Image: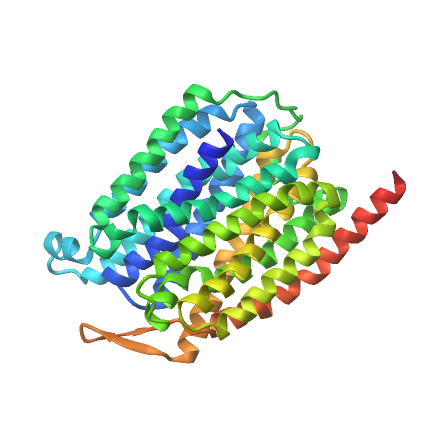
Length: 418
């Protein structure tokens, strides 16, 4: 269930984080501000869902119902994207601004889908993972879960990308939606709730517990790990929403699916192999070289031209991407207070999703518009992402150094005390 639900959840987020952007860019609007606004709005919805449902699952001591039911309705809402287009709006409301109405509809539907998905995956499933793992094996578990975003991209690019290239967006969203819904049914059969330590106090108190200054003072390691995750997340969101558009429109790589397949397969292998190393050398200690690899990839990408150089730079970039994510995620689980696993998933959403997705895409959009590289599509000028998005991401990454070094010092003091 760790693998199945982890993979299917990331399959949905791949569509939401990458292909939905391409869908909007190709069929509705080429304005990067539209993508940035959609990403930011969905991040708010996802965070609210994780905070509320995570705390509720803690209070009830149940994850299974939220996982199973959530995945089913998540799948249905994903399939609904295929019903929205500017042409459909023009037929239904010929006197309205078809593009504007379509954009608003997509943003609202994306918020609904993000709320349902985050409640099922980011709140209930991730809390369940914390429940059923322990400190000694979380490096390995996180290294496998960290691979799931890349594996999901690989499957989508390899098996389903042809639908988007042929303009069969309705079929694309329908297939993804059905896969997610089926995973919910499977979860109902196989997932079992793990005993959860209950805390005194009401639901509202549990909901806002982690936002109190006292909680920060009591759990410094947790908030240092979340801070590092936040900086890494902002850095990734500067370029990731525009990555496919960059490969296709700026580098003119027709076979970008092959590039991504090779890069994602290689990075996934690196992540899985690193799992045992993370547990052996220590998560905080492993973070320093991992950040260095990720930074090197960001600096190499602007230099890469052509399929082979891009594959090489991409392997370094995405391997570093995964090598940072695995130990950070494991550290957050290690520092999670007993009985607060669901609530901490809400905090994770604030630091790892909400803030990065509110800040990163807007930084990326500003950089793209500042470069002012455009192309004409059916008489409409569209902005094209340039290599500067990777340099901007590298500049943001510098801010991760203080929390990473603090985590390493804290880990060293803990080992000395033992």
